[in-house]
Structure formats: C-alpha cells, structure tokens
Image 1 (cartoon, rainbow, N blue to C red):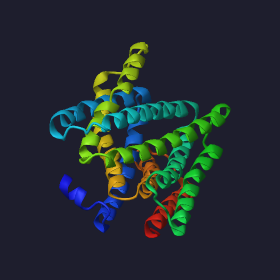
Image 2: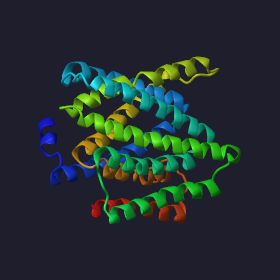
Image 3: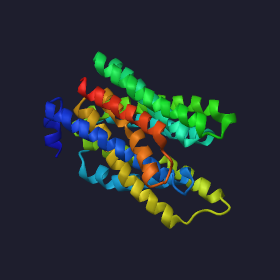
Image 4: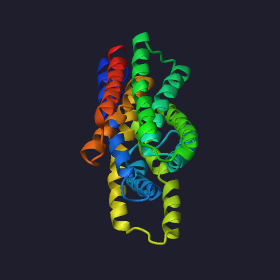
Length: 300
C-alpha cells in the first residue's frame, strides 16, 4: 500500500485518489461532528475519542510503522501545540454561540486561510476559475452562518464573541492543515507520521475530560461514553488520515477546499438522522457549497 501511494504522488492517478480521499474526509468529518454533538458533554466526548485513537495508534506507532526520522520530533511538537490550541478554541467558540453558526464560520475561514498558506509555503496557485469556485463555496458556507444567525440563534449577547473566536478557530484549522501537510511530506513513510500523530495527539483532552467528569454531580456512565469514543476514534483515523494523505498526493489547497463540503454532509445528517429542519433556503446555500467545490475541481 505504501509503495503504491508513493508511486502515484503528483500523477493524474494521485490527483484522482486525492479527490476521493478529500470527499471521504468531508463526509467522515460531518459524522465526527454529529458524534461530538451527541448526548454527552462535548468535552467528555472529545476526551473519550482522543484516548481511544491514542491507544489504538500506539501499537502501530511503536511496532508496525518505521521509526520517525530525527527531524520529525520537532514537527510532532509543533503539531501537538497547534492541535491543542485548536481544540480549546473550538470548545470555547461552541460555548459562546450556537453550533449552526459557529461551525460554518470555522469551516469557511479554514480553507481560505489554507489556500493562502499553501501558496506561501508550497508555492501552490489557483486558476481564476478555481478562485471563482472558492468564492462560490465560501458564499454558501458563510450564507449558512448568516441564515442561522438571523433565524435560529438565541445567544445574541455572546454572538459577537462567538464569531470572533470562530474566525480564530478557522485560522488554526488552516494552520494545522498546512503544517500537517508539511509534516506528512517530510517523512519517507506517511503512515509513520499518522500513527505517531494520533498517539501524541491523544494525550491532553482525556486529562481535561477526566477532570470535568470527577467534578460533575451526576457524571455519565463510562460504558456508553467510551463506546461513542471508540467509534469516534475510528472515524477520526479515517477522516484525518484521508485528508492528510490527500495533501501528500496532490495540492494542499484543493484538498482543504473540497473537505469543506462537510458542511453539506453535516446538514444532510442533521436532516436525516437528527430530524433537524433544513428548508429551501438552506438547501440552496448547500447547493452553492457543492457547486463551488465542483468548480474548484474542474477549473484545476
């Protein structure tokens, strides 16, 4: 598998594989968000997910994949800091504003910053048609945020703070996407980066979750919580692994933009499984997101 993936880097086959991986990551990211939005405290759910994927990754990191090259340790340290800050910002934003407003803003600002970062770091460029696609996609994402802000939000007193934190969170989405793309390209075996990343990244949030769980008057049973954590850990493996592999096989900016079709998948999941109302306006905005992603792909 590793030899085949390395052989198609930068080829048409690699481009097609990156497209499939980015769309798969978008769908799985929406599933991941739905799991976090479940019946448990999101801090507890995130802790259960992180400890699950950390434990599952450990045997692969220690005994299966090649040992990391010396220069990777500094890269892992940077990734650890960036992802930790991102998780805290995300939780802070959700505590200040509604999920339906914060999520589109985070996911909308993320790819815009990533495209800029990919240009500065990897010298990637977009065609005029692709920039048009980015504009269409972002108009759909931010349109969803504005629609939800006008019609659905109750937390008016904290809305400005929530939006500001959401933009900062989006900046860190771009930062970790670009930084991790650099990291996975800096090792001979991409699975070395992924295995060690998941093992290291699973350290902080479980400690936060345990602290919150102990302070609760009526803490939830650990069985259902850890079941959700194991499922979320498996989804995280596939979602993050897919988008990182896509950034190695093809352009970082294109993969980041295509991943943000997760907003469409999230709305569909909310409609089908969570029985949330979608409505014609939101359907039209989701169509803009999908159309923008298609234009970015076709215009490349």
